[in-house]
Amino acid sequence: MTVVIEKKTQAVENIERNKKVVYESKDLNLWYGEDHALKNINFSIYENEVTAIIGPSGCGKSTFIKTLNRMVELIPIVRISGEIVYRGRNIFDKAYKEEQLRTQVGMVFQKPNPFPKSIYDNIAYGPRIHGIRNKKILDEIVENSLRGAAIWDEVKDRLHENAYGLSGGQQQRICIARALAIEPDVILMDEPTSALDPISTLKIEELIQELKKNFSIIIVTHNMQQAARISDRTAFFLNGEVIEYADTDKMFSTPSDKRTEDYITGRFG
Ligand SMILES: Nc1ncnc2c1ncn2[C@@H]1O[C@H](COP(=O)(O)OP(=O)(O)OP(=O)(O)O)[C@@H](O)[C@H]1O
Image (cartoon, rainbow, N blue to C red; front, side, top):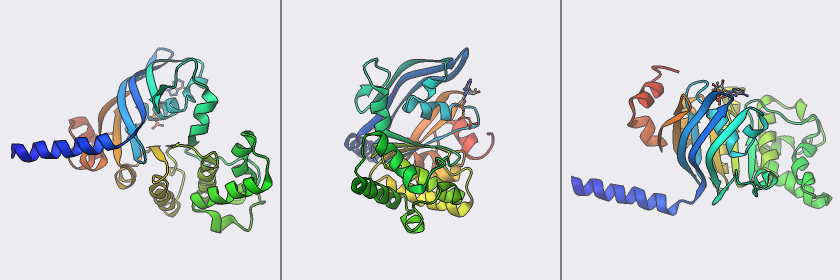
């Protein structure tokens, strides 16, 4: 029996060794004024995986995900200690250019937030900011991004209409396409389906499964079934701490911590 367990452990370690780390959170602490919102967060996020962040309201999920692209630092009362290492470099290093990080890390928010512009201009916005002016190249980026977000067929004949004219689910896929247009490495998603109906939710979930072949995806979700359906690993946050971080299958079948079990079985939260 011992031998079998040892073999299994070895196999798991081999899998871990072959995975590339995208982000590493090291002793990360964050305060909003006196409020200690993230406490000693230590875990790694892997390439071409979907990593789900779950936990009850106010536990720090959004704060954590917004730390990964340094958006949280826009809030004046925020203070941070520790490191977030992205592809080998601490993003809080003085020399690290925020703009450089933003070209690598796209974000999709809870409520679809297209710009009040045409579908085309929504997608071309980021590339134009990065200096791309050539119409043929922009056309290609727009088409590829919309295809990547599984919405090309629905909008290809109305690219110059306002994005506000689309349904909520379509608008969210436009926002995903907008994130893809900057050719990111990572896509952060903060409850991307919570404002959507079940069919649009399913489409986004299927899309996330496709996208992970080319991107690393970190998703905050209130919906535990969603985390179980689409993620490879899950981090369970509670009161600003990571209580458990594990393979999603393992966390939802045999959680190690009683508090995780209570949360995923609906005893609190
Ligand atoms: N802008 C802010 N200023 C001050 N405190 C904040 C701010 N944003 C979040 N907090 C506090 O930080 C803690 C974590 O909040 P956060 O929004 O990260 O939690 P969450 O898990 O994403 O919650 P929810 O599921 O409700 O969105 C909470 O105590 C919250 O009140």
